[in-house]
Amino acid sequence: MEKRQELYAGKAKSVFRTDDPDKMVLVFRDDTSAFDGKRIEQLNRKGMVNNKFNAFIMTKLQEAGIPTHFEACLSDTESLVQSLDMMPIECVVRNVAAGSLCRRLGVTEGQELNPPTFELFLKNDALGDPMINESHVESFGWAKADDLAKAKELTYKVNDVLKALFASGGMILVDYKLEFGLFKGEVVLGDEFSPDGCRLWDSETREKLDKDRFRQGLGNVVESYEEIGRRIGMEFPS
Ligand code: TMP
Ligand code: ASP
Picture 1 (spheres, rainbow, N blue to C red):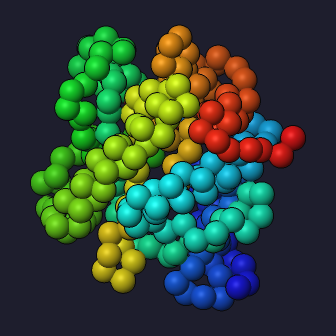
Picture 2 (picture 1 turned 180 degrees about the vertical axis):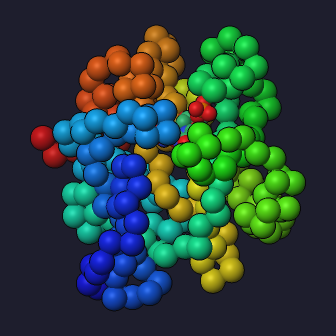
């Protein structure tokens, strides 16, 4: 497998073609973005930590029967993935109120959400990733109704698997964002799962361990990501 030209550079990852049209290489960079790219900083080691974190989580999800695009880590910061035809939408599940939900609805951070909410956002930085609903997805052709239904079902299944995994490390999975695409007609989890795209709090102290540390200037961002990993059984090179 040979890495070829860059296809796309996102805010925190770059995507490269390979000599196999069905496979791509994701490169996890140290760039850390918040507020739809309005704030970007380099955080030493973050690319390595997120690449390894994502590999660990994607493997757990695959073991639980959730199809993902992840194939293998190629280096500290690179992973081989299936090339998906991505849906331009973000699927967000929330177990506890935080972030934009609190701003939008005026609810208190920390309120438990039972059952968990499911929300859709359009991936569009220029528009600030606006919230959309299922009929928008269908009417604008962003995904077929049955593919969206499958993505929603898988997003909830991820919740069952990861809530339990993080609980075993003394953490609450507050919310998370997933992106899906199609591979030969099948709905497959794409993009990444890392502390950049979810909220995780310490179960006892409710300390924020995820990218809110960056958004809110709390410091020790990458150290905290490594702490999350260690609590669920990962090891990182020193
Ligand atoms: P929100 O509270 O800002 O709507 O975010 C909900 C969750 O989804 C939170 O864990 C962060 C994640 N998320 C992203 O990773 N990228 C995004 O563009 C958005 C809108 C949310
Ligand atoms: N991932 C988005 C961004 O970079 C939103 C966020 O995490 O705040 O800007």
